[in-house]
Length: 126
Image (cartoon, rainbow, N blue to C red; front, top):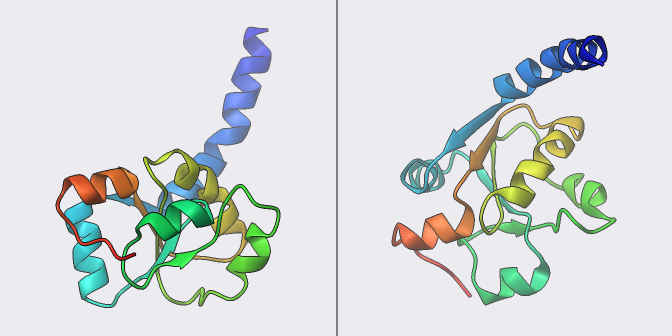
């Protein structure tokens, strides 16, 4: 059993290192600066209903839990960095491998999600 665990860890290590190269975790302050500088496409991976309740201005909505998530990613410019978030960080973390598979090469992850954005006093659009 120990050997199997070791082999699994050994096999996943390069994948984790690869992901770390492309993904940068940011807080609300850093995310706001990236947005203000026009350096990122904002991708909100929450449900459509959550998005309608309030979102970051200019954000694109693509629900990571929907079957058409990969299809929606096709319309987003992959040459521009993307800032991804959900409500609290769980679903956006889940979306990261899918973003990499879709060809995004520079990914910023708002770890605290929309909740952290609001808590930091950042503007929300409805």
